[in-house]
Image 1 (cartoon, rainbow, N blue to C red):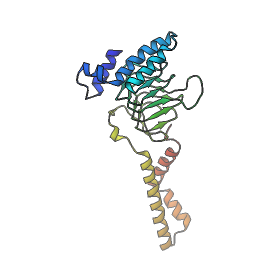
Image 2 (image 1 turned 135 degrees about the horizontal axis):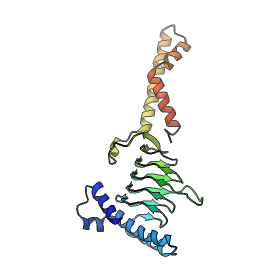
Image 3 (image 1 turned 60 degrees about the vertical axis):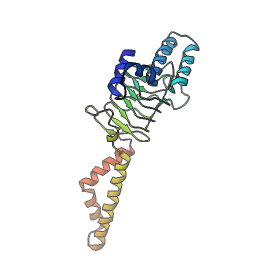
Image 4 (image 1 turned 90 degrees about the vertical axis):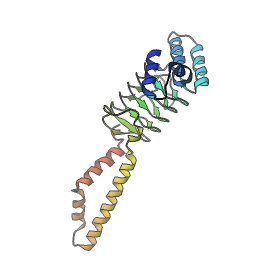
Length: 241
C-alpha cells in the first residue's frame, strides 16, 4: 500500500522530485502511514494506543484521521493541513483530498454517520462532506463546497449546498479546477435575462394593442425561456442531488 501511495503522489504532483523528499516532506503520506498502523491496532481491539497515534499524527502533520476510518490504496492528501476524516468515513481507492477538507458528521447520531467516497474522487480545498451519504466514483467536489446529500458517479458538485454542475467526468482532467461551472452565476444571469425580456414585452404592450395574455403567451413560447425555466428549477431542486 505504501508503494501504491508513493506512485500516486508522483503521478499527481508535479512538485514531487524524488522518493526521499516525498517520504520525509509530504505530511499527507506521513498521516496515511500513521493511520494504517492506528487502524490495524483499532481493528484488533487495542485500547487507547490507536487514538494516541492519531493524535500524534495530527500534531505532526495537521491532518486528523480517526483510527476507525477506512482508507483505500493510492489515496493522496495534498498538503493536507486541516483535513479531518471521521470515525466511520470510508475513502475509496485513488481519492485526491486537498487541504481543509472535512469528512464529518451532522450531529450526535450513532452508527454509520460519516460519508462514503467512491474511487477516483476529488475533494477540493475547504470542501465539507457531511453525514452518512454516498459519493459515487469519479466525482469532483469543488473547493469550498458543502455536500449534504448523495452524489451520483461521474458528476461535478459545487456550491453551498452542493449542486451537480456536470454529468460526465469521464474525459475531464481531475486537476482542471478552473473549468468548474458557476451554477449560481448562470441562474442569476438567466433570471436577469428573464427580467429584461419581461420589461421589453411590457414596453411593446404599452406601444401596441397586444393584450397581457398575448404577451404572456409569446414569452412562454420562447425556447430560451423554456431552457431557463429548466435551469432555474434544477438549481432550486438541488440540480440532481
